[in-house]
Length: 148
Image (tube, rainbow, N blue to C red; front, side):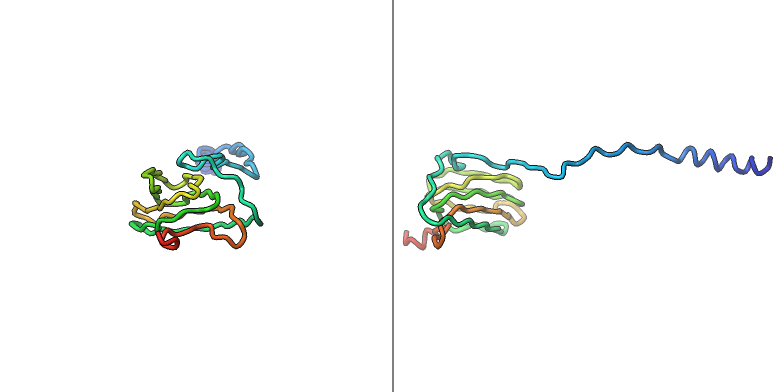
């Protein structure tokens, strides 16, 4: 009887502290696809141009812009799209159009339009850009390179 009385608190404590088995978590999808951007227009509302003649060449760049820094004024002769991975970025065209980007935002960049981006945040702005260019042709032209 004495051993049963000693065992009773242990059994009660065990019963109180044991949690019932959890249900199996819902199965996770092995692949998830999220469309970040699908458009026929650049961010300023202009129609994207037809593909150029020549051997297509894909280029993927990760561009990091320090806080307070700005890219030089430039233009792209071919279509490109990007996703801001982190930070903040403001893009401005020569005509005065402005686009504010936060981490996670995507854009179809302007084509053959002078513009620049600047980081007005406190952390580096990191943007991943994919260019649909032509082999041996630049994907970016700096304004100074054209002598203007």
